[in-house]
Length: 395
Image (tube, rainbow, N blue to C red; front, side):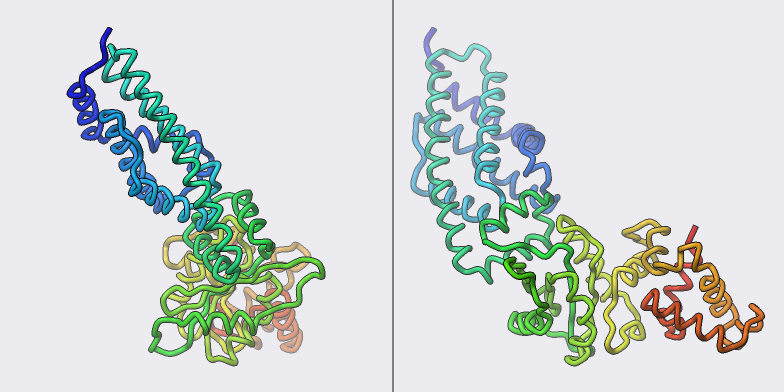
C-alpha cells in the first residue's frame, strides 16, 4: 500500500482545521486528564483553546509538508513556557497537556483517514515524536530560566503570585505550595486579605509604592526560623494585601491614620483568595458611608451581610448569622440575645430594660458585653443593622 499523496494529507488537514470540534476535543481531553488544567477558572480557558488551535494547525502543517518546527515556533513555545512559569503551572503538567493533545490529534486523523498508509502513519509518528522532543527541551529550558528570574526578584514574584491568586489561577493548595517553595517562602496561613483605598470621592489609580508602604506599616512579627511572605499589589484605585491573619487586628488604626478605608477577609482558605478578594471589593463598592467608622475596617461578616443585601450571598444565611453574632449563638448567652433583641426592637436601652424588667444599667452592661464578644457596638447604626439582620435570619 502506497502512502497518501500530499493532496490527500492536505484534505485531512483542511477538514480538521475547519472543524471546531477537534479543538474542543483537545481542550476537553486536557481538562479531564491533567488535574492542573481541570482546576483552571473559566477566564483561562480561552487561552488554552487558542494555544490548542495554534498547535493543531502547526502540527498538521508539519505532517503535510514533512517539515520541522521553525525558529518562530520555538520562540512562541518559549513564551508559553515563561507565562506558565510565571503563573505557577508546573512544567510537567504543561508537557503532559501537549502529549494528551498529540494523542487526540492522532485519533482524529485516524478517524478521517481509515485507510492511512503505513508510510503516512510513520510520518505522523515521527513528526509528533520529534516535535514533542523539541517542544519539551525548549519549554523546560525557558521555564527554568523564567523561574530563576522570578526567584531572583522575589518582591515581583510575590506580587505576580498574589495577582494570580486574585485571578483564581491557583485552585489547589498543592500547586500553590510548589510555587511558594520555589520562591523559598511560606504564604501566611491563616491569612488576612486586606483591600483598601483612600477616603473621598476622588480615587485615582493606586500607586504600587503606596500599597507597599501600607504593607510595611502592617508588618507583624514572624515566627523565628520561618519566612512568612506578605505581599501587595494594586487593583485600580485599591491596594490589595496578603498578610498574616494577626495583621487584621491593627489594620483599622493604620488605615485610620492614613484616612483610608478597607475590608479585611480572614475566613477563607488559601485556595479561595479570589473569593476573598471579590467579597472585599464588593463590600467596598456597596457599603454605606456610615459603615466606615474611623479605626475600624469592614470584616468577613460585613462583607457577607452586604452580599446578602445585594442578592448574591456568598454564604448561607445561617453562616452569615454565625459570622456576625459569634458567641451570642451559644445557649449560655441567651440572656445577651434577649437584650440585643429588646434593644433593637425598643429603640433605646431604657425602653429595652423596661421590656425585660431590668435596671437600665444592667441592660447597658449587657450591650457592652455584646460589643466585647462580637466586636459590634449595638449603638452604632451600621453595626446595629448587621446585628439586626443576623438575629433575623438566624435559624
